[in-house]
Image (cartoon, rainbow, N blue to C red; front, side, top):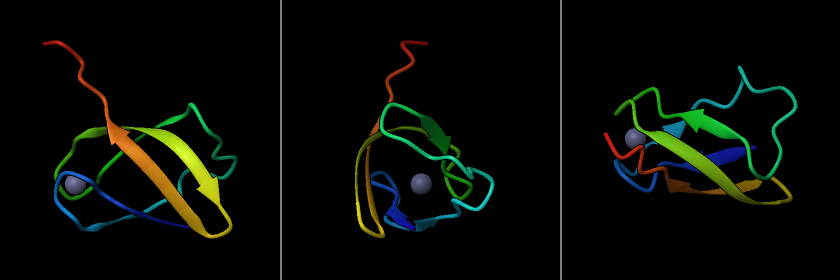
Length: 54
Ligand SMILES: [Zn+2]
């Protein structure tokens, strides 16, 4: 599966997330931002930036 980080436009490594599902959160290993999975369509994963409100 492939996810492009909406923040830095790099490919996010999803290999640590073996059971990835909508609603999960992943971390971009390039910019370190937290992403919430919005949709999984075939091999394409869409995510939005999580505002942690810090
Ligand atoms: Zn990123």
